[in-house]
Length: 359
Image (tube, rainbow, N blue to C red; front, side, top):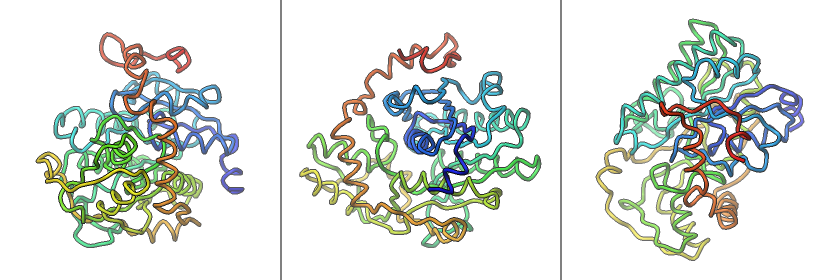
């Protein structure tokens, strides 16, 4: 912690997608380290942005409702930043099939425009891009290391892979400093909970807290790699603090696979709810990849990091959080009017600071 505090205290940091799950947890941690934080989020409904995620820190940060494609406003935001954590993304595999052109626009074109804005206005910034395990698709071998080919099975995964290549090409051709992180199943507080199309564990938790029955698709035997969000944030900050990590890609997971069925059983035991097996809906079966867990040897060689929160402890913390604050997540209360207020007649966000929008 002392090393991170020395590195980030007073550092000018930008977090894109900072009202979402990982971005807001990252913002809270960076505040503890004394960073000067700016958050940008387009606040697209249903994608994880939630005013409650930053309600307790909004007076300590600068937060703007911008889209990465808004070159003028974004130019003014990026020009003096030392670190840029690029977490903005659509993350729903199902939604990417329902509207692939929307996913292309938000997950590809927006990032290419953003990188070009950076190249013009702040090419020396240190950029961290968070991709996903979905870039690997179906595993050819396990655990999956960084040399595993991309074998995507859905539109969202294809676009995540493309954006990683955009960052890599800006390193190679324009001398920018980027590092790329491929995330496993990250879980914990501040995840969106108002629909089931972004990860299953958060939905299991919501269903359980509301005392309904958790539905596990298939036989639940498929293995996944769960990592608590605090551990993910710490690893990302440690990577970003090391110059030698730029130009590289790193898997980020727990290194301890757990079956979907076992995760459901643990949620049920903790909450007193029930679970059952049910056939895969067709739209979910189309993007199911089977066993998928990551080799984390490379990241552990690069930084002094080991997950500190095991699945059971992380699950208990997460359930406790949503038992206390679930009303702010079940329907994302207040977000719909907030989103409408942020949108102009063209559908693009207007450019006002957070405080001018929400109060």
